[in-house]
Amino acid sequence: MHTVLLFDLLLRNTHVPCDLVAGYADFCLICVFKELIGSSLAYDGGSLSPWKLVDNLSYFSSGFRKYQQEDAHEFLQCFLNRLESRCNDIVQQVFGGRLVSKLRCYNCGHCSNTYEPLIDVILEIKDADSLHSVLESFTRVEKLDDPEIKYTCERCKVDKHVSFPLELDLLPYIENIQSYNEEMKYDLYAVIVHAGSTSSSGHYYSFICAEPNEWYKFDDSTIVLHCNCIMWTLSAYFIFHFQIIMLPVSESNASAIDTSSSAPRPTGAINSSDFHELTKIADNELKKTVQMSTLGSPSAINSSKENNTSQDIGVTESVRKMHKSYSS
Image (cartoon, rainbow, N blue to C red):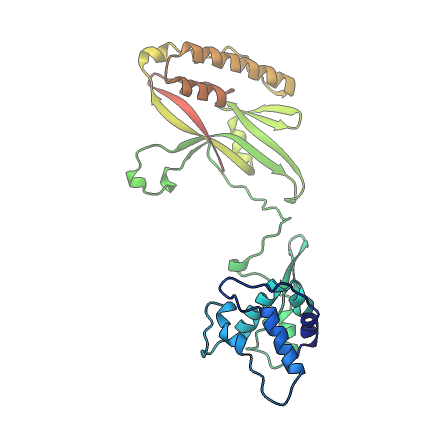
C-alpha cells in the first residue's frame, strides 16, 4: 500500500472489462486493489479492512485459508504473481530485476552467463550480522568443486580414450535377465572421431567397416584402408553397432549360396571414385547372392538388401546373420 510507484501505475491502469477468473465472478484483483488505494487516500481516521482480499485468499493459492496463519513472504509472492498475470509488466516495472550467474572454467578460462528474472532476493543470514555482509557473501566468487554440482564447460573437450569392443554383448545390462532367452550381441560397424582441442571446433572423420577385418577411414575426400587393429587406438565420439540375429538355415540351402566374392580388394590409399566403384561391385555381388537364395521371407531378404549394401550375407552351414542398426 505504501509502494508509491505500484499504486500510481494501478490508478492509471484501465482494464475494461474486469479480468475475472472462473470461480471468482465477483472478485477482480485490480479493482479491489484500486479500491483499497482509493480508500487509503481518502483516510477519515478510521481503520481500513481488506476484507475482500481475506474472503478470497484461495484466489492467490489453494493452500490459503481464512483465519489460519500463513507465511507473509509466500503470500507476497502469490499476490504479486496474480497481479502480474492480471496486469502485464506492472510488477516487473516496480520490483523486477535480473540475477546474473557467471561461470568461468578453470581449464580454458571460458565464461558463460546465465540470466534469471526475479522480483526478490532470498538471503542466507545464519553466519552474517549485517545486510552488507549478507550481500557480500551472496555475491562472493565460489569454486565449484563439489561433485554433486560439478560444472561442465561447454567448450572443454574430455580428451580421454575409452576402449570399446568389436562385438558388444548387452545381455548383462538388460532387466529381468533370468527370463530373457535371446542373445543381445551387436557388431561394431562405424566410428566417428573428433579431432580438436575444444568441443566447439575441430574436425570430424569416420571409420566404416565394409568387410570383416577391413575398415576404411573417411577423411573428407580421402579414403584409406585399415585393419581392425586401428579400433584399439581411437577416441570415439560416436560408435554404431548392428544387432546380430541368428536364423537357422538348412544345409541344402546353405550350400546353394555363394558367400565368396570376386570383387577386388584395394590396398593402401584409395580415392572416393574408387570406393564408389568398389561399392557398386559389392552391391551387384550381394544382389546375385540374394537372388540365388530361397531362404527367409521376401521381407527378410529385402531388409538384408537395403541395410547391408556393403556387407556379405555371411551364411555358414547352420546360421545366417541378419542386421539391425544400433548406435551409442
